[in-house]
Amino acid sequence: ILFAVLPKVDISNIVAGLGISFAKIFKLDDWVKINGIEGKVVEMTPRSTKILTFDNSIVNIPNTEVGGAIIENMAHPTGAYRLNIHLEIVPMDYNFVEEKLLIAAANTVGVLEDPEPFVAFLGQGDSAQIFEVYFFIEDYSERAYYVQAVWREVWSICEEFGILMSTPQREHFIKPLG
Image 1 (cartoon, rainbow, N blue to C red):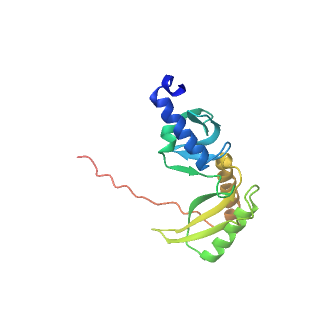
Image 2 (image 1 turned 90 degrees about the horizontal axis):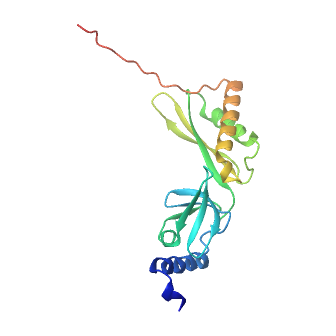
Image 3 (image 1 turned 60 degrees about the horizontal axis):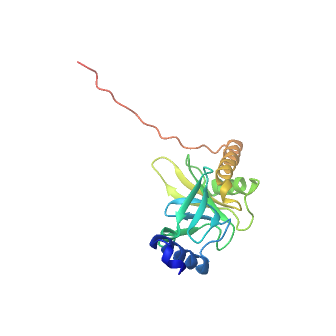
């Protein structure tokens, strides 16, 4: 009798909501990305899932859309979130650079010790050695802060040890008029 008064869309949302709850794809307070919308799950009702975005707005997603969406849950399987920064260094001993970059990431307050940070040497670019520094944090909503904090440590240690960031050089030739 209840279903007779509910619109078809509501029935679909309720059924999808039950499927989401039973599948345990995410739970309240998980940081997720659903169809490109990223944020913290703040409410799950039979009809919809509400996401608090990084911009501090609420997005209400109907459960029929959630049920068919590609969902990325950053809170599982663990609460450690991996971030990275990409940098290009004027060529020098890459082992030395890698060692200093690891120290910079490990010295950043809030970067997790387990899993520990690591550095990937990606090879030689046009005029630079290319590195990525990977590190893990606990609170994904603070990722911008931690990326900036790691960058500050990297800059500081590069200055201390004479490691130079590469800056592309470009020449422009302008044909004289006339």
